[in-house]
Length: 111
Length: 110
Image (cartoon, rainbow over all chains, first blue to last red; front, side):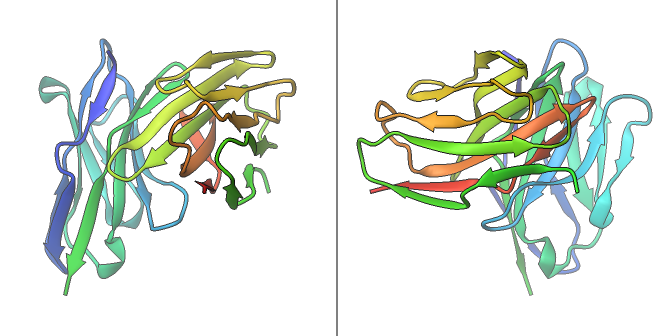
């Protein structure tokens, strides 16, 4: 079955430190890949997306993600986190009209 | 401004009652979706519709029903057959290569 997996349920990182969130996908062909962020009680905000071309994708809020076909991964990174980055992050994969989400990774930022 | 409107934001219902969640879009998108969000489980697809008068079951359709009589509207009914209806529900539309989300409805069944 086509799916997206986020191996880490919860990550704690110090403010100013780097952050990497993992995402693995299982699709027959290269899917559309997305990272979303959700603050408590809010809807989803798109951080970045990948369809084809350059495997390093730049997004909003200083985030970037790298598509690695050999590893079936699409990991999200940020060089230096801010306290406002504390939120839940979702990786999603889609083909045609169906979009599937990972279970999410909660990021806690400590001072 | 174009977007997806879900109403109400908070909804309370008694156990055993059916309840309908509204989702309206003015983006002129063909495809619309309903997701359910529970802590630690991400977003799970309930139903989706690619065109008016047609819809398909997602991964957790049991206890839910939908209709798609108009392109801009995709209401979700949570029936009394749904065992654990308390959750956060998100409606989305899809165009090209991007999904657009509403702000969600938090349903609490007491």
